[in-house]
Image (cartoon, rainbow, N blue to C red; front, side, top):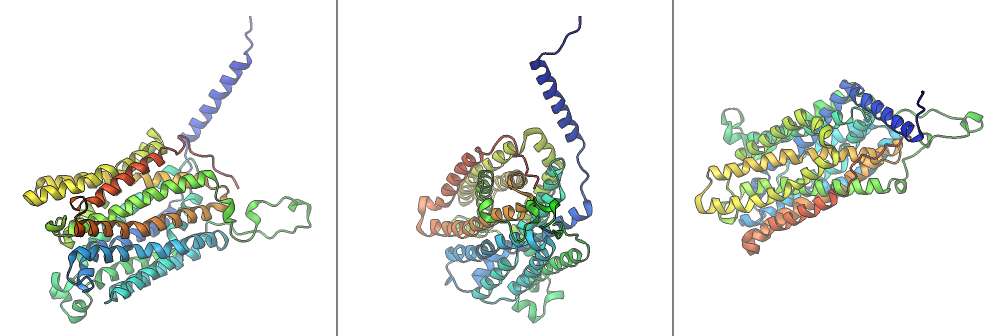
Length: 476
């Protein structure tokens, strides 16, 4: 007797067939275009090198400018402003750079950004006044729209089958830059004192922080040359169309001239993804500003009293750990647990990190810097390395949330504008809270850590609102 499948059985068979097809698709990812991906990663590494290279010596530089009146407790106010001013100016311009790149192409905007980084770092190293430092960082932020454009390029070079591998590489190179930047800044600062046989002449004594700026500028200029010669445009050229012909009655969204309307970008998936990116960016930049300040300040006012070289090594080790973790485990962990789970777990790492700061301070004040202090620093470095996986996750959420392929630049520009705003507020707020906590003895000098702990808990709650499954990407 022949059995004819029922409607339910046919539905189950159809679902199983679809699942098998999806499984086969996941097992056969599209090969990555490695030459273009490599150039994108090279450009990505210039961002942390130039931004983080100043962290090991910025607090000492501010102290030497004699704008604090000899009161080291006020260093945090001015150091935070210098660290924040880049993100303030970037927030004003990055969205426009990204929207323009949707229209004129990615390559011209990338080259402009690299030129801005080179010029601003050279200017920073030659500045002898607080005003000069601020102007240099403003120039860097105004001319640099690359950080949003690079995410658009990565989205265009990958698809849903290989995007985890592609975006996994971005935190790896960020970790590489986060390693090289602080090492260059800490090792090459004040070369007349550290390498008197080579840099003992008057110029290097007059400009003690020009050498790390020169080294980072040379790296960026090399990236500029490679991009100019080898990078291929990822935005397809618009084909001219004749509205009078019948085959042009229905015009695709990608044929429209001009940047994509911003009002059409503000849909729920974009808003939720960008909001989570903002919370992650705020916590990460606040921690990056707080850690070197905490390590620099004397024991008496709640720090550990380390020198720039030691701080550079600590931050360099953090960069190495981040790069290795992302390179070997990110894509595997994403496939195993999913983007949302890893993002929430990464955000949750910030709360224990901020709790460890007062623990280290209290033990160092009573017993000095001991092996327990170094163990706490090691735990912080490991938690920071794991939390950095959240960036790859949220970048994939943002890419998938774009309402149109032509809106990818505008979507990434909007996300980077929002992140730049909180990154501008983060260092200034955090370092000022550190200074105010120490100066006015707020919560025994530890109010800054309590406030950041509360922010971390709120960020976890926001992260839990992301969907368990990634949004379906728009085709046009």
